[in-house]
Amino acid sequence: MSGSTQRRIKRATYRYIEAELYDYPNTVREIEQLRQEIIESTSTDAGQPRVQSNRLSDPTAYKATRLATDRRLRHLEEVRDAIERVYQGLDQERKRLVELKYWQNRLTHRGIAEELHIGERTFYRWKDEIIKAIALELGLMKT
Image (tube, rainbow, N blue to C red; front, side, top):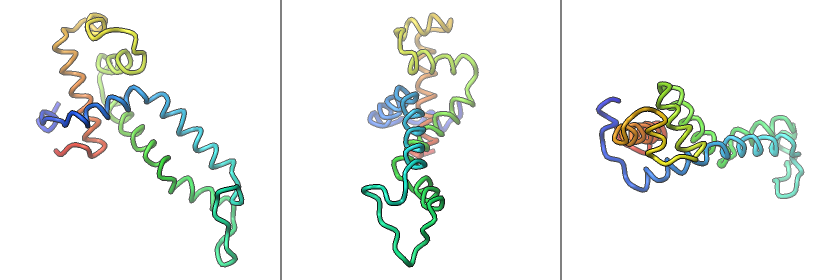
């Protein structure tokens, strides 16, 4: 990794990124559910602002606007996209580390290192590099 990823990362940021990695499969499902809820909703659903006479009442435009501006959806997509960009840029061994550590979560760190035929120090170094790369993608760490 480049020298910019050698900087120290705040402990809270590190833990946040790890939590997002563990939760990634749920995040992908949640994004799909939120998108479906918005698409299936109508502009007169309970809790939704009523369309005023001087505004467009086009339900398609309303849904498109909600899809583009929903803060929770945008945040989830931003996290998902950052994880996916970093993941896609990894070699096969590091991708496997992410899968074993965060998405399957069935082996110890030592077990993952053995599965990947690497030392534990290499495991921790790779894991740190991946976390830092995601932090950079999300703008949570200065370059």
